[in-house]
Length: 401
Image (cartoon, rainbow, N blue to C red; front, side, top):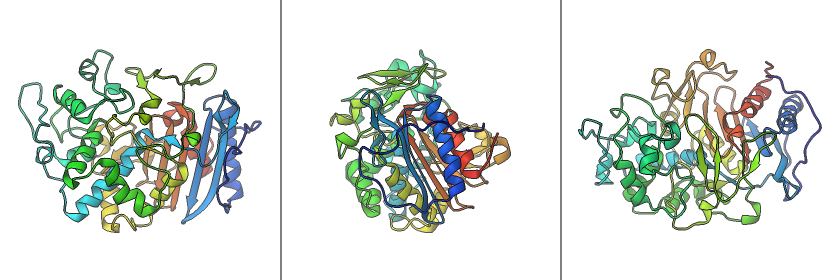
């Protein structure tokens, strides 16, 4: 899809501007055009897009609205509910504990959570390992991956985006009450596995998950704006959901249409201290902080991981035959890994890492071309798997469709 230019929506202006960026004029013009198209088409409300090449930030733009109804322009230091971008922070923390020998990939989950013993339909109890959790091959699922009358819906299992005040203990009990979807290790299925992983990490390290992620990841990287709590409520972007003729501002509870079932969002969950720290979806942060995480990983992991650990982290563990979320993509220990660019219809080279977040975010790292790209929006689900992330991706590579 080509992205024609259009009149620009408001750019950053509500907060302090970031550092000066050495822009690549041709790339900047293409990405600007893609953003302008998405805003003009009312596909998204606001966005912050950042690109780094060879360790240098070459593009940064905040565009559209931070709060459309108030007329507040997006700001480049805006805080976003990260949704599944949380998984990358928690997975890096897991890799750090693996390096330290605190846990192993083949450890059974019951070593750390003795009561976590979900069964198969026939009543048998398979072993679920840390590896299964990290690769989403544990036999678990998300309610959003099943129909409205599915077992996770009936058990009221939380995705970590809803049900403020729910405890981890209660959500684990609900997960265990539902039969596994398949024998662990035999398939790939996107799931609450990273929430369970977060509890494993907390118990293994004798710390809360927020403390652990700060100690092992955000602290060493100096990511002061990212965590399981909101550091500055005035900078938290207003969330919106897909709608016609334009996205709809989220209220206290908001449902976004999706197949096979609608997805519940409760934006104020982040303010309820009783809510369990969901390793798959609970963090809040900025595009700048996330780009720093990606660049640290792309360049070898310092100061959070060894380069050999990053290589294992970002290597395909589950292949395309496992039927991941998109054709041509496999899965590593916490992120998608591009296996077949032709099948994926992507200009990215084989070995690219990528993932997304339900509140409207995507990112990718292209190790071959030394590129890191972050595109955060305040619009679910368009910013996650609508036209917008593809337009940004293609603009970075100079591809027209």
